[in-house]
Image (cartoon, rainbow, N blue to C red; front, side, top):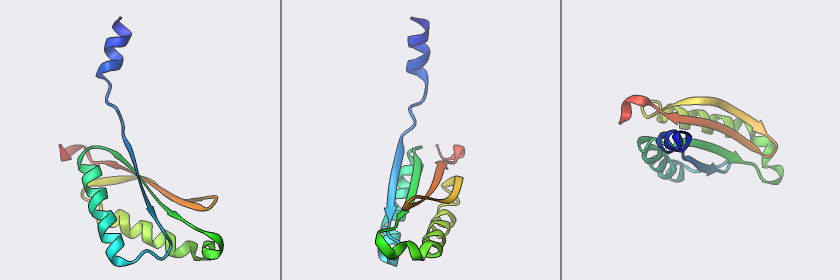
Length: 102
């Protein structure tokens, strides 16, 4: 019974994903940025990734620059837990909300 009570009081961590292509345009970037700000303000964790299809894997540096720019724009809303890292066809970056937002 006590364990059940403790379990019910733990915070549920929500993980939201935002997907980019290596050649994401500014307007799309801003649109996804707006959503990311909302997710972080709600206290969710954020997983932003660039998905490389076919030969677009040649633009790994473009993907990394995109994710780092994304992190920089979200600096006041959250902190980076994991810097951009290539895993297969995806370059993944994890962010979590800052504590003082709520």
